[in-house]
Image (cartoon, rainbow, N blue to C red; front, side, top):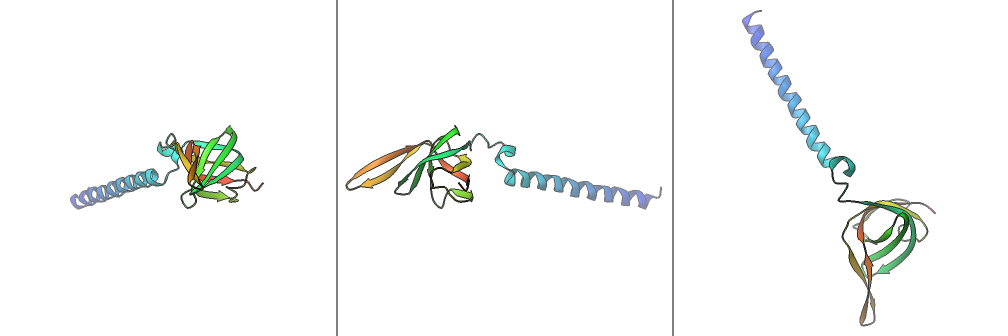
Length: 133
């Protein structure tokens, strides 16, 4: 082979490898940033819940929703912070709910004259979808 041809081949190969490595690194960064939780290792931080909504208790800053089986509990719905999907029936008892939540327990307050009533909950709802009925 001619000496200039070899130099050209080496240069083109080096450029190709650099572009390929850049594409792989960029794909990895985008995957970690935009991948669903179950693929990026954060599934344990956002545990799922789901079941029929048994009761909704409104408080000063949102609502505490009691969810029945199969994965139930008492969870806090915060308007504006909780992302609601599907039919948007989050505060209607009797609909089916499916979503993710935090593991942060807390209380929600109801003002009753000069006293406060506390409603305990097991976690804050991150995202939730609802059934129509």
